[in-house]
Image (cartoon, rainbow, N blue to C red; front, side, top):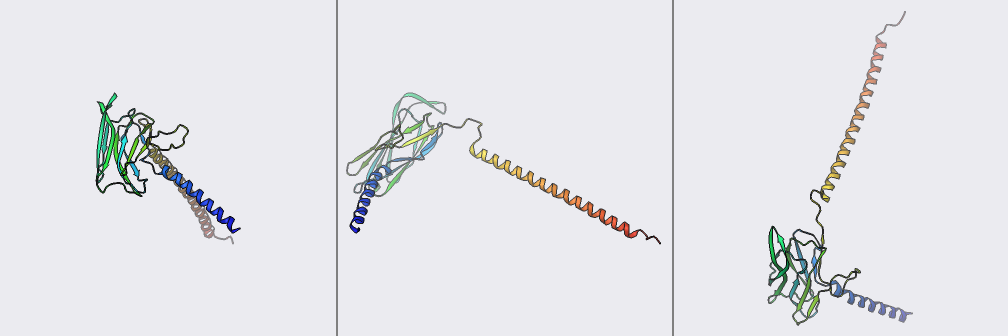
Length: 241
């Protein structure tokens, strides 16, 4: 019985280790946060880069912006110990930004670590980018290349699968949603309206209750007054001989 239990425990431990081994790399890919933004607007995104190697450090990150969904303005936030370079490419179709026509846009951003600033095993680094105006598209796929100090390059370039399953080396994806029509109430405005209506109903209910209470008190006072008057009248009337 003990041998059977030991074997069962060993098999369970191996199975758990196997599952974790498979799940580990998939959960540690390069990501973009937040994962959603509004079409036509500006946003700040953060590329989060975890180090997957146990022996090497990440020394370089390359982010490729989609050629079919260009943005006119790209700004990079400095990262201590890293140098950043933005490369531009000619656009097949010019885009307009603030009434100005732009014929080229940033197509690739490369961050390179200086000595001592590498992403070491068991750590991660974040790289902030300001983008806009965002294109009228459903999503932006940022294909990323992660270079390690041992020369290994991990290519996070797989686009989202149509069946919803996660690919082996998924690229960071920013989902884009349509902007709300002009004049349409926002969620916060609707919430404020609902709160105001509820408050109005509460005040109305309180006013009605106070009015009814006042009416009852008035009737009670009138009844008491009539009774007192009747009693006084009876007391002042002389008794017959």
